[in-house]
Amino acid sequence: MAQDILINQTVAILCDGNNIERSIHDIAKNTSAMINFDTLIPKLLSKRGLNRLIYFREGKSISSKLAERLHEHYYGSVIPCHKSADIPLSIKATQLASKVDTIIIMSGDSDYVELVRHLKSEGVRVEIAAVRETTARILADEADYFHPITSKDWFVFTSPKLAAAKSRKTIPRKKE
Image 1 (cartoon, rainbow, N blue to C red):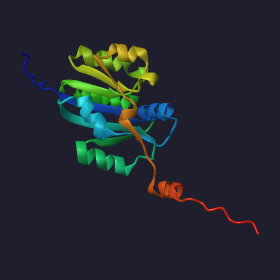
Image 2: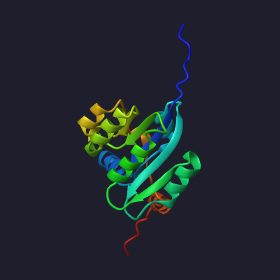
Image 3: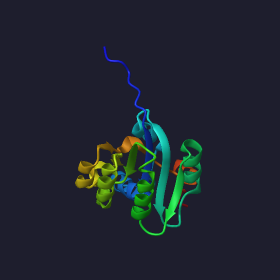
Image 4: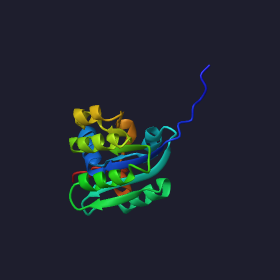
């Protein structure tokens, strides 16, 4: 009879926020769709220890609520990027390579292929978490493991004002 084996690994999750958001919006056909970190992170970790969670986001409009939530629940952080997240994420991954066993890159962008190769050459297990339909095949093939992000891993955000407006029924006026 097989015994339960404890996998004692430390994991860093580095998310290219713009790439993941675009992928989800394309598949969901809704720009209000957002990652549900409460279901996705435990699925990605699979009982391994979380060392870092960093969400790289290009642009000025970064949700302070997202940053607060990631910090409160996962001691995570949101890092604004001047342009693309590719270079900041790659630098951080290289810095973390000696501190963790596994790095999970949340992106389907083929720009990360060389980073994956480098990290693996340093002895780091590299996993990719992304929407399969928008992930570069070469990236998924190069990784040690691919985690598909599916519709079960996101939700569609509706603001309270929008939800209230939709729930109100309009009563047609009688013509006089």
